[in-house]
Length: 290
View 1 (cartoon, rainbow, N blue to C red):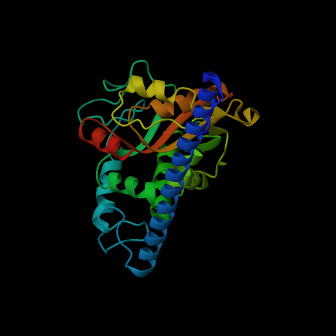
View 2 (view 1 turned 30 degrees about the vertical axis):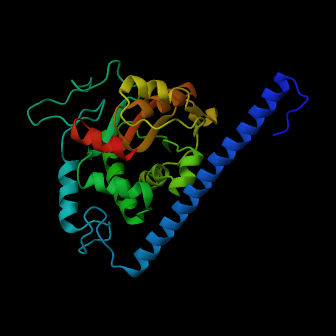
């Protein structure tokens, strides 16, 4: 780079400009390569769906129903759905422990901003396998099945005050570009359809947060702070919002999304998730997939 005749300040400025352009080009090249690979992977998966037999989303067995699961995995799924859980954090409650509306021993302190958690089950097989499949493939049949079960849970838990609007925990556009789809949005669409409630876009992600692998809850709260914002506050005013996501682990992401919705005028937020990742095993397994 030609810097003869320039003073040290100008030379330093040009050097920084050159280095910034170089690193930006490297990052853009990596993002483009990642996006291209994701598109190729999704095309191959779609081709496999056309050429190969329809397989169970959880165990790859050939005995698969219209809901995307084999008969055994469907039984296993329903057995997880039947487990009792804490309505404040979603953690599984033992058979001899009463379910308390005010929370359980596993609840974070202070309690999260959302009023209640509605879940299908713990982050264990076959739910774990289904959630992992949803992150990278659309699995329309499975999305419809999970949406049906979640909506049934909402109807059972919220008989007196059903939600006014359904929103998903939004994915940043960069991650959505890499994944190929927003699986939480697809799940929220299925839930909204079953409940005959509008699917809203009142929650947006304004910051792409770093990965939260192995971060404790306090660090996750810091990581997620300011990641979401509420828009169209007029439609949120006084509303009961059903916030939909695939998995909750510490609740930090849903808690920050709830903060934005309440600040936007919502009166109540209920969190609906497919699974609650619980320590020690399920917690570490979910973290490895984020």
